[in-house]
Image (cartoon, rainbow, N blue to C red; front, side, top):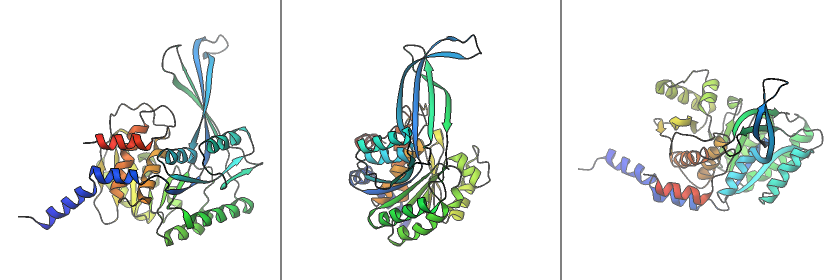
Length: 348
């Protein structure tokens, strides 16, 4: 004899069916998503090891090449583009070589630049990673050097940003906020534009490294476990009970409808209002190649899924699969739509 509980479980299973997830991925192309956040240049310097220096106990490397990729909000933009979406950046770069490199990469990917301010007084953030190894071996990161600069809190920067975000609120399906603490995202501008997106029912998602609690009112946030621990002033560790308490507390304090905590090799934890938490096991192997930029992949897929009509749980499952693919790649890397579809099809 069927019960209401049985019907409810079957309905939930149907909503999480492989077919429904594939339908969502098929709806990604052309979906306009505004990405507001810190544009960062990731620089990779590759070298082969020669010997230990006589000047100091350090390795001498022979320079073998270099590579530039986009980090921060830039990586989210490239992930959205790879998924077929129509990403629209709102951010700031300096009138320097790093800023010009970021603009060249965005232009080459046919991402519109109207929302990117180029400021002569601004220094574009650059994260330089030095990787070394023997001639025919995989190179390992031995050093990272960050050249950092925060965006000025001035009216000549904030006013154009408000105008651009106001325009985006009329045509975008969602707003993705990527905050790496370089202050492209200001609390004042956030408070002014948040009602515009919420009024039209557009989801607003947040990935904030150190300022999670300053942007309450978002639809959903995607902190990792250390960020959730710091924001909730709770040492989560490996304790699922503390994880559940911290997640419910953060969800309430943020005033959000959803919270997706990424947990590395332990997968993810999804929290929703008036629903029990859902622990999602990691997709694929736990033998991770590189976690760089995986959080950008997660929030990109999560946001795009919500914009295309997914439930929080459907969006979390797709984001979890995409995150599992991203960590198997070296450096900041995008996950393509066909790649995601193939992984969904292979998922038990």
